[in-house]
Length: 329
Image (cartoon, rainbow, N blue to C red; front, side, top):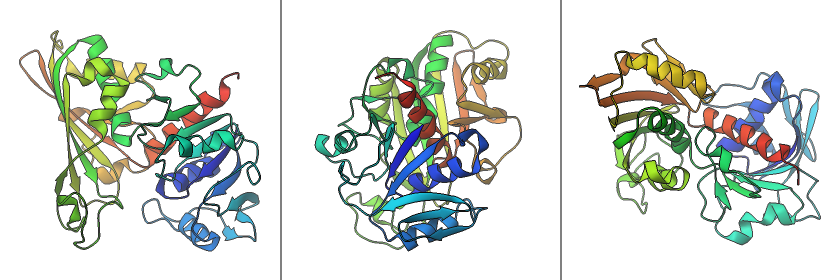
């Protein structure tokens, strides 16, 4: 598979880190990385990562690209990629977070890529697809949104539970680490609560997961509410879900959840009393914390799970890119 990474921020760098450090991605060729930041800055931030630690490779900025050990990756600093400066690619990974129109969503296609994968919610995509939830609906869509990290965490789980037992109603709270949308010190933001220093407070806020769930699983989404709480943590987020079920969960709740883990390859589980730091760099979309499972009666179920909102989501970007590249035109 041959890809272009457009945008070398947190997700773009994490995708490249996984490609270069995991042997099962040796078949992926990165034809180009594009970002408007200076090459030297991008090389430095790729080499030294405050979340995942230093990259276990030699990294340097060449005149026209990144050199990682013996591997050379072309780099450009174009605001608008065109077919004049764009190599052939199976998938254009749109990781800038700046898709503000259908025209900008189509830019990768017009430059020559076979498909575009957007690393976040987008109203301009042909389809919003979440692996483990609605990926059988991919079809021939050429511009695909990979939705959000939180939607990737909750949608496969809700689909599996609704299929197995039926969901009458559900509420999910995402406990999300702070992101660069929050300031380090108090500073004006459109959302007043998010204008407060992200490292100092827990911040109730909005989440796109509610509207995204309606796209991915409309029937389940109509019966589900989602809320968000930002917490002063560098990485790894969590979900706390309470579900009213149509059918009794049975004598062993965790046996039911174990069966979900075996069927759904993007969901993991742990029996250990873990904390968020233990889940850093887990590739699962969600890791169920089985000791936290609770029931009230036979039809109310509480589930708690962890997700590395950068590493897990980046892993799904690679998985989805493979699905797009594997299709025949």
